[in-house]
Amino acid sequence: MKHNALSIRPFIGATDFELCRNFYYDLGFQEVILSPVLSLFKTGQLGFYLQDAYVKDWIENTMIFLEVENVSQFWNDLQALGLKEKYPDVKLSPIREESWGRECFVHDPSGNLWHFGEFAK
Image (cartoon, rainbow, N blue to C red; front, side, top):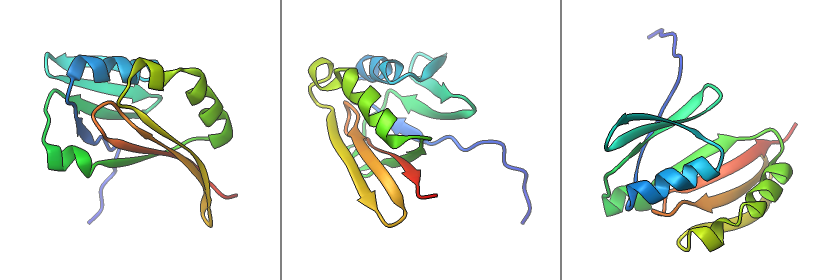
């Protein structure tokens, strides 16, 4: 099957929609409000949907990988945001070296797990 895909946008849930909206704004995403319970968060041409919906099994099993140009710079910028002080449920895990590249991790206020990484060149 051939198709000309233009984007892929996962849906993620939120235990506290307003808190999560603020969190993603702090991470540098731009919000497009689609309804009172759904927003599109974008960075460049990439994006994801944040829903005012919480399903424990869904949230606890959500992982998203976002490739960044320089994971060291991203990690430094991430730490400078003071996210753990502002959002007590956020978890940050430092850069880990893998055979394929490097990545760091962020659990958002709801528990969605983000991998931010760069591939070995």
